[in-house]
Length: 199
Image (cartoon, rainbow, N blue to C red; front, side):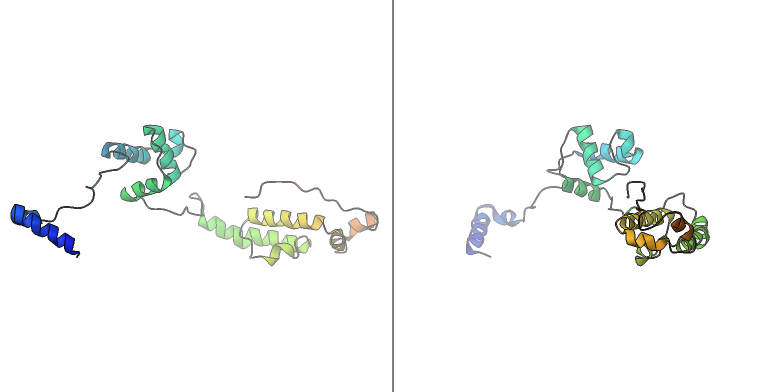
């Protein structure tokens, strides 16, 4: 302690007695200095519990910090920093959640059957036809039809730039008949592929 502090205490003691030495509470009281009043906080929580963001014309599927920020601005015309919104949510008992990567309606038995039967049939057929011999399988195994389709399209786009490699496919017994119909030296390989958004 600094001697000036001790000196101040001594002077206060001499003037007011022991009551001057009682420690005063420091800092703000709970709830003091907040942007929203308790009633406003309760209203926002009520809206969050009773509605989805989309019901309140907020372009979000779930209640995120950004969605709550938009709700506060929409209801009370208060522009609140995203970090402050996070502090309110924490105070209200909300915690960050990672979304499930599985659909709620997903049937685990059907998924298992698809992976063990249908997917294997697709994979075996593709390998037998020599379409996805390398590029697609050089990565971790695909687990669903969408992923398989994306990898296949990506591989075919790569093949468009490698005509010599495409010509080798025509040597495979299952498609050698196509090579007989045109002279590969003069036959230009240009496979039009559908374009779609990969997610």
